[in-house]
Image (cartoon, rainbow, N blue to C red; front, side, top):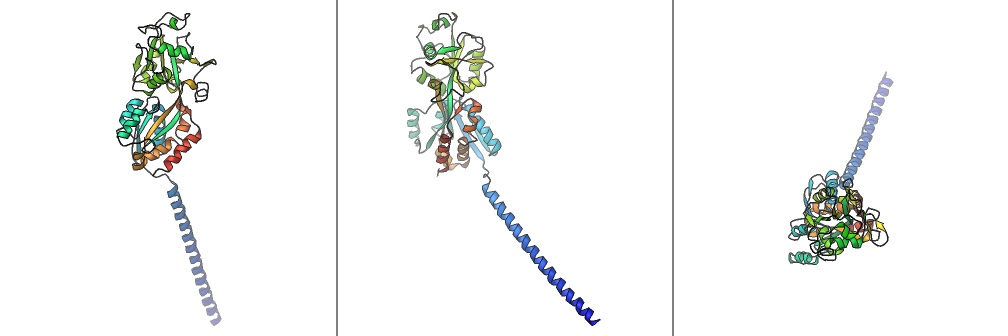
Amino acid sequence: MKNFKMFGLLMLIVAMVFTATACGSSNESTTETTTQAVSQGETQATTETAKLEGQVIIDGSGTVYPLMAHIAEEYMTNVQPDVSVQVGRAGSSAGFKKFIPGETDFSDASRKIKDEEVAQLEENGLKMDENVLEIQLAYDGLTIVINKDNTWATEMTKDEIINMFLSGKYKENDVVLWSDIRPDWPSEEIKFYGPNENHGTYEFFAENILGKEPMVTTANLQQEYSTLVDLVSKDKNAIAYFGYGYYESNKDKLVAVKVDFGNGPVAPDLTTIGSDLAYAPFTRLVYTYLNLDYAKAKPEVLDYAKYVVSNEGALRLASENGFAPLPESVYANYQEILNNLK
């Protein structure tokens, strides 16, 4: 009996030791697992994009508008839903008038900033490169469009296009007939259309294509590109010019003139538009200009600027909006500049 009691006591002690050991192992395992979870959680938290809020204000080119608006939509939907990116389309010149006094964060332009505009920036304490960054977004092809029922002017030489838009080239009163361009074309008056002076496209056409010579006084110049599309689509004798993107989105209403630059007619499209491609004489860069002081002061402005020049920004979305994207290295260079901004 005595031996049985001793055996029972011994077994009780063994059981108590086993239980204590097991509990200790369990606690150590739980502690280790928790520590790993916290560590992983901290790592995840540091790699997530910081949540931003506020406004980014953009105005300027109507040509650039579809591209910049698409980039803004993607950014607000997929990256920073609490940041409001407002994109206007007052025109390149009108956009700079807002950007120079500091009313906007970005200014879109379908032509390079002018010397007088740079001087106005400096008067407001802003220097190019130091306070303002010029960002090349993509290539655009200036496109000459005609009515769907126009079957005779689907191909023209560069000189024919230039001369028909020049004031006094054919008639003193600028009432030009199609037959003035080629005798076998209809003896009907050409109706000229284009964007007004607020737009960089007007300035590019007037300065780079017409060589700063006066445009025909009969040209009907409009603020809205949608109005131009509508006018040309309803007028058999109409001809107009604007960015390729507006033609591409209205192919069902308009015809793009193939332009002969000396080596045969070339149709504008994303395979011909570029500085060293077949449509080069009517190719131009489009831009956005960033106020670097605002980018330094407002995280949402800097973050959006980085998105614009990221692989998800202009590089990916340019072609979806009728622009030819630039080489990836160009956007990477802007990324580096923005990443080093202090």
